[in-house]
Length: 202
Image (cartoon, rainbow, N blue to C red; front, side):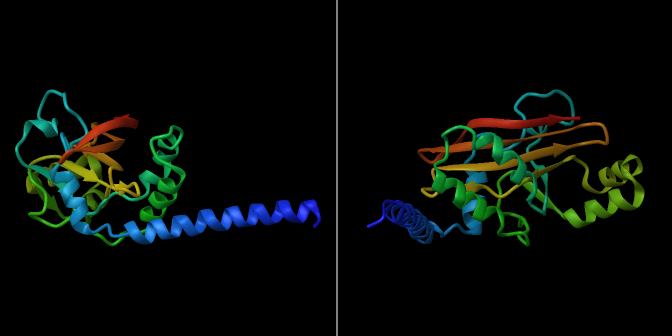
């Protein structure tokens, strides 16, 4: 048999085996539910973007924090490229994470499902800022919602659901906000921060 034919066959067979194994693994583990998202945030050490910051904008300084009802989606598509430069996630994990990133665009966080969180209407907040402009919009916002707000993405899990990527951000004025993308690893019954990247502050 021609040597090039054999090489091509081996390559095609290897690719087929990889994709079949990935599909089998995904179908076996593809049981991520909305409850898994809430379980993550309810068992995460410091789910908010910062641990130390003075003043009334510190989300760690209040018992109940506002959370925008619409999860962040697009940010993770950019930030995962930095995370994927190391070996935290396998090739199969990366493919699985990208697949998850395309789902749940219509998900809305529900009131009462996360500890220490008051879910506020993301569409209403957007309307306030768009109609009044942020300079005027923030006072209008505070009159209604009292505190600044957090924005979370859904967690994107590895195949074995022991690691995940999540974006978290916080805003409290036209001049201040912060956020980052994080990798968490599950240790016992808690999710612990493993790596943080793409931080921003304004």
